[in-house]
Length: 282
Image (tube, rainbow, N blue to C red):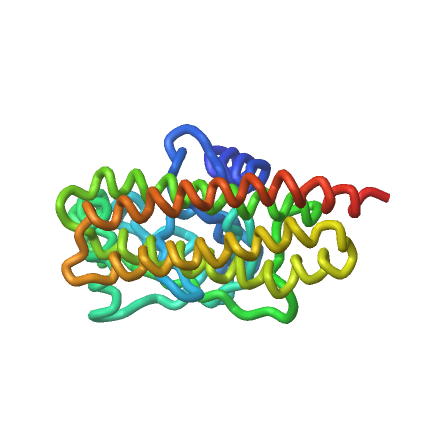
C-alpha cells in the first residue's frame, strides 16, 4: 500500500513541478519509480539525489540508517530499469549500484556535502549503497511535464532559478573551501544551461522565426543574451575548476550569472510565452 506521507510529497511534487514544502523544502528531490522485486508492480518513492554531471544523478539508499535496505533499492537491484521524474522532465534510466572505490568516492563526496550521511552509516552494519541513475536516450525531444510549450518554458526556467538559489545557499555554507559536490553541482548547472540554450537556438527559435517574422528582433536579442550567458558560464567553469577552488572567487561568478540569467529568463517569458500560449489555443 502507498505510504501516506510519501504520497503527499509525490502529489505536491507533481502538482508544483518539483517544488515541495515542509521538511523537504529546498531539497534536491526526484520521484523514482521502480518495479516491485516480488510483485512486478510499479512503486514510486521520493528520493534525494546529487548531480553527477553528464547524464546521470546519484541516489543513496540510506533508509535513515536502518539495518535493512529500502524497498526501492531492492526493487532496482531486481529490475534496474527505472523511471525518473525531475519535476520538469520524465525519463527512463538504468540504475547501476556502484562498487568499490567508485562507491566510496561518491559516498565521501556526499558526506562532505552533508554529514548526515556519515551519521546514517554509523547507525548500521550494512554498507549503505550508492546508486547511479543513468538516463536512457530516447528518440525525439525530452518529455517535459507540461501541458503546453509556454508552460514547459516557464517550468524549465523555474528549475534553473531554484538550482541557482540552492547553489548560492550551498556557497554560503561552504566556508573557506569548495567541496567536491558543490563543484559538481556548479558544473552540472553550466552543462544544463548550455544544453537548454543550444536547444532553443536550434529548435524553438527557428520555428518561431519561420512562423512569426515579427519576432525577429526579440529572437536576435535572445541569441545575443545566450552568447553573453555562455561567457559567464565559461568563467564559472574556469573558476570552479581551479585546484584548489576558492569559494570567495567562485561565488561572485554565481551571483553574476544569476543576475544576468534572471533578466534573460524574465524577458524571454514576457515576450514568448504569450505567443506560445496563443498558438496553443484552438
